[in-house]
Image (cartoon, rainbow, N blue to C red; front, side, top):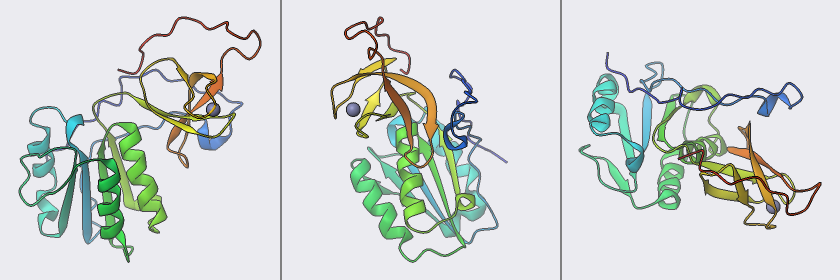
Length: 207
Ligand SMILES: [Zn+2]
């Protein structure tokens, strides 16, 4: 069977035993393939995150459930006949919520794209009443992160650098590897709390 490969290996791992279990480690991802225990399948794709040829590989992977498959593509068109194309994440989430309204235990949701994208889909599916076991995620494309400020609780999107200014409070945050599944975000902690203005070099580390 064809499966689609995630580039889940290309990142640093940092486990901190002092962190709560929910955010102890980075998520790991496996290839997307249909869960044939389900009867309805919703595949959600971030178009820009795919490599050339990946869309047709996905299509082949899901051939066995093609008759019960709905596909939502976010951002731009892909060579996937019948796909529901949405212009951006907000519109994609509305389409996903509409599709999952009244979803049963037979529903399965699959998402592929950057981590902010796939965890947004994950949150929408959980909000719709689905169980973790009904959701499969695959990271592809950019390593950019959504960062949750531990001080003001705002999120900053599309972070590619090791340090970022919080969009909520303006503090300069060190982007940790601690990940909250509930928030779908990485933790950001003020880096110059001890010595204000003492900020290391800012580097792009999540291209
Ligand atoms: Zn903040």
